[in-house]
Image (tube, rainbow, N blue to C red; front, top):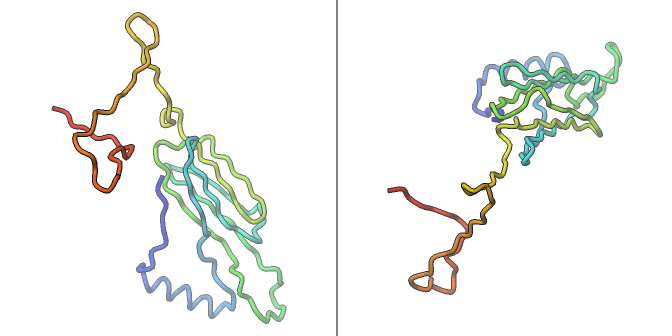
Length: 171
């Protein structure tokens, strides 16, 4: 899964058009949806901040490994009312995430609470980590023990060479 990020060095004319429209309309245009993404053994989790958004306006779709989230925040005031300050972004928000082949897009779950949209993107069965049992030819299980080779010389300043990483080469 990859995350499409905002490009601060993007098209300056597009940003200028957005600013001009914002000034002429008197309201703020929607910016991005701030989000957190993390991975667990079961899959990915995505949390998006959508305060003040009606959960019924949230639309989540997947098409060709692209997850699209869109939501709308409407103004509390009516047209024609004397608005003194309008700082909260309004309109339609959209965010797209590129999904890898390892995400099971058929079983994505979404929940909305306290202004936060939480998506659970499970991994496909083939992509989930699994343990493989080693068996002997006789059908019984065998424990395999790995022993460290004795160090040829002591490392300087009492440091340990057992860093937990394994490296090797094939001949």
